Image (cartoon, rainbow, N blue to C red):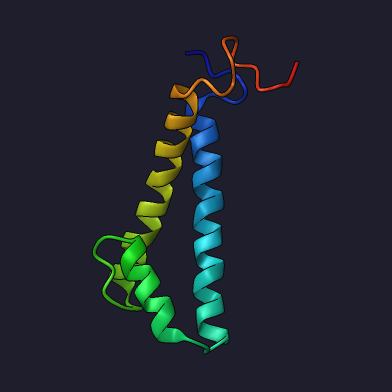
Length: 92
């Protein structure tokens, strides 16, 4: 499978950085908008392996997992052949 848009590694890296920025935005929202904090913590615990609370280690684990998910999702997208045979994602 040919992935020519930006290359698998470049695309995955860009999406990974985007996911990390979204996570940081969620963490900032958790800090400045103290509504349903227990729900936030429970959702983080469900979403990220090893997340135990708002501490540095849990946040680092969440950041790493979010970044890795980008590579997994781009890989699955490529394997599914969504971009077509030439790596072209344009509709015909």
